[in-house]
Image (cartoon, helix red, strand yellow):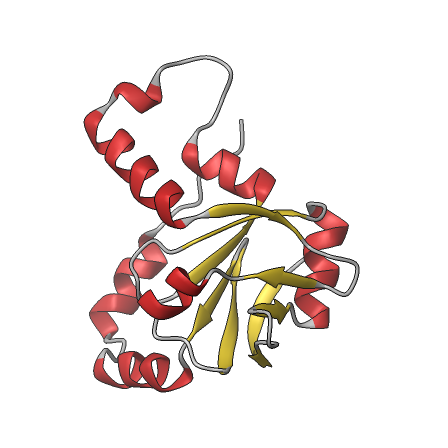
Amino acid sequence: MGNYLIGSYTARFDKSGRIKIPAKFQEAILEKYGKEVFITSLTDQSVQIYPLPRWQKLTGLTDEGLHQLKPKVRSFMLRVNVKGSYYEIDSKGRVLISQALKEKANLGNEVEVVGLNDHLEIWNKEILEQIIEQNPLTDEDFDQISELKPKEDK
């Protein structure tokens, strides 16, 4: 049951810009995926930490195919790789978040680390609360969500 990245925890950056991944999240990542992660920002509102196997699956990085030649895919890969970096979770459960990513997502010393099933997002707590308050879920939203079907793994 420890393989889920769900819930949220408050965390702090240390003086070197590293953040300790909350213990429950750290345990789940290490147990299921290993210590390699890709850290980036998809929208500049938050920072995402993807276990490397999940990131590779999401981006379709394979030994075959030329996905990077598609203009939209290339644009996406440029964006996330210019801002993103490969890291390994250190022996104390920490990862380094670049100053550029911290500034783009307006991250202060104390942040909220949110589990989104297969990756983590690091948010400025106040901005996250505002977004949630300003965008309440409606009955129509719940109807659309209930119609989503998960894709089967190949």
